[in-house]
Image (cartoon, one colour):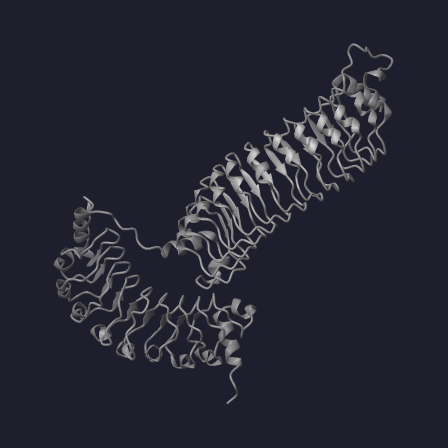
Length: 583
């Protein structure tokens, strides 16, 4: 010990941590008065740094006043039950760490140590902080976590240099508007695990705030003033009572991590999809769906959605890799339309027309076309035309002259009327895609014009289906796509299609699966994800082994265990087959 103390008098720094000390050696308090034999008193320096952490010290003597130049005092992780009033006489003290002790109070005298910059009193039994801390005008780093604080003294508003505040794990019910407004230099705030019911409006004054952690409180809303936190990079709001988010959240352009798990959110605002997040945790909320615009958040590395009643997404997407989910959501977005004619449009059409001479296929996807260009019917023996992602509203009569046309793709346009007059003359047409158009109700005889169709996609055209028995004439139909059409039941005329191999009715409002599916012997893929189906008829098991794909993700199924569902189509059909009554 003598050797260590001698070295301390030479360096001004003494580290006695982890030495199982029951008390502070008296010689520590004596400072220069303890200069021993062989030492030159004029070469000795006053103690400026004293580390006594991780011992079993129960008290600190008033003699601490004998160290007037002490700038750093760390007596954390001991068994202190009180601090001496003499602590206030340390006029040079800049950093005081008394964390993880048994302190019930900090003496008011601490406010006389006006040079204090950093105070760590976390992990004690404090019910309040001394008002005198407001005298420490240079105080910038305050840690008081894991105590029993119910409030913070208003006098702390004098500490205008405050940059880091940690009061996690207390009993705070409110963060004072006055305090927050006065701490405009704050960069980090941790008030997690308290009983806060709200966030002060003055939070918008914190333009330098980088990290805000308010998880595990009782907060019901985020004020719109949050937009003032223009440098916020991390925002933790998990385990609160949020039911919605303000649109101003979308203005936090530097936000990278946003934790909203375990709240009561019913939707994620479209405005918040402008954020350049890398992590977004929305788990354990009340989300029934997601805005497709989330797909544009390409910076997202991790999107957590488990524990939500989402019915518009397959569970494999919800629990799968984030990039796959983002791609899927982007696919739901309407095509971007050009505001005016492009000077290169004619060149593009001409080039596509030349290419079609050899391939017999003409592709003009996403070029902002408002009408079908004449090059389509002027191209000899064309067999496939793809005009998707444009702004076409009607099909010209001239298109009926394309008598060799087999595939016509008109997805994501503005077609309202069913083009019977054109379609009935396209005798070789076997594939028609009209998904994502504002189609009005199709005439009851509309499908007779395309009776040779093998593939038909009408997805995302709510209420466009004709009355019964319109599908009955499509005897050659093999693939039928009716996604997102607000359909509430599977029609009998669909079940009667003799060659149907693929039926996609996902993202609708189906509540049950009709027993009639047992007669659809050609069916190989049945996609019913994201509906309201709660039970499965045992007769569905009769489709084994012809049915290879049965998708049921996103349904509130209660009649079959999750373990069976997770094992896939074969296990589901076998389970249902076993439930059939014996003949």
